[in-house]
Length: 404
Length: 127
Ligand SMILES: Cc1ncc(COP(=O)(O)O)c(C=O)c1O
Ligand code: FES
Image 1 (cartoon, rainbow over the protein chains, first blue to last red):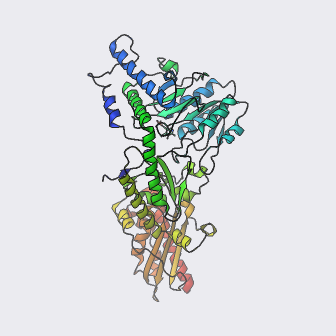
Image 2 (image 1 turned 120 degrees about the horizontal axis):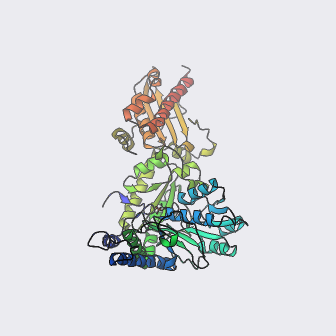
């Protein structure tokens, strides 16, 4: 067994070897290295054809027209382009934006920037299972609202929002609807028509493609217009200038194609692994699932282990590559804002671990993970005065702590 | 975060984990920190009639450095007189464990814990 075991697929995925192979054909002198914008020779034409094939592959996964796909450097850029681009273009109509408190920083910081420019932003709170309820969106929409941005799948919790219901509300109220789908593409079905989505962000490296490439879906009918954030040669119908990175794009296209083909089988396999992991650890005392039992993607499970401290847990689990809800290591001692937004107290947020499972995770990996987690948690509880107190029936909230 | 070998050793094989009878007149308890801050340390000492620390136990909820600091401290105080134990400084702990600057507060917590435990047993015995 190769240690550490990689259980951080929500952070990034390895490139599928099939994808890497294909990318290699677009780099060297023997390959199709041309600039897709070169109109005067075959090198350019070949590269352009490859880019358009990839555009079709991305469009296929989400039920879109390829002309609605704009290449970007990743989901961060796609989120910036969608939210700033749409808010700016429509600012004469209004300057109110709606998003949620548990969006990725690429959305939250974009909204903060718009606030500095004079826009007003409403941040919706998730319910205790981490879901954004469509009714909350409906209640927040005002006369001057132009953009609603809600993520499809939350990266820390794996919760799956009801995008179709939110989309329907936005369409009825004539508000543009953007969705960050970095964590959902290839993990759950997406159809931009049925979901009434106007703009949607994607990233290749979350779905076995390369880092540094993503895309934004921008609806043509009814037409959504956005202001470019990157100016230059007018590539991507003026929405995003810059020479297209053929090999990256081809990699993303191939990754989306493979993801689409395997979606059903892969989801079922990964869901079974997720269940195996949860069943394997949840019979221990005081183990809590963060997020939603029924509305989630297969690959992500977030668990709090009460009465053990997060950083020591990560240390004990150094044979597992996982993410922690605690930022203790960054010296900030700030627990995850996502877990805080669910109403978890600091201790529970600090003691949470996100396991994310993917294409190359085996049953054996999960069994090893279960064993390591059980061992670490019991060991640290043996060491924990809080566990003693809990076992003695003391309510920790009533204790007077000698804070230092 | 890279931990020093000594921290890892104490973390992997913590010394003197456990609990002494808090109600005993010979036992001093120092419980410091708070769950919300991410660390709670309980350090206990048992002293003989001469004021020598015969036994020490700890339990710690906290990061690896906090666990190592308290484990090390229990080793150090055993066999020492209360007067000596009181003098232990967090800087000595931090130095021994090669703690990086962001982990200094873990050693401060350990110093607080032993001071509190000594004070507790002194108060109980009126010395
Ligand atoms: C929900 C979500 N949005 C956006 C991003 C950023 O994507 P990228 O790394 O492609 O910029 C990520 C990944 O980090 C994510 O999980
Ligand atoms: S307990 Fe968090 S840094 Fe020591």
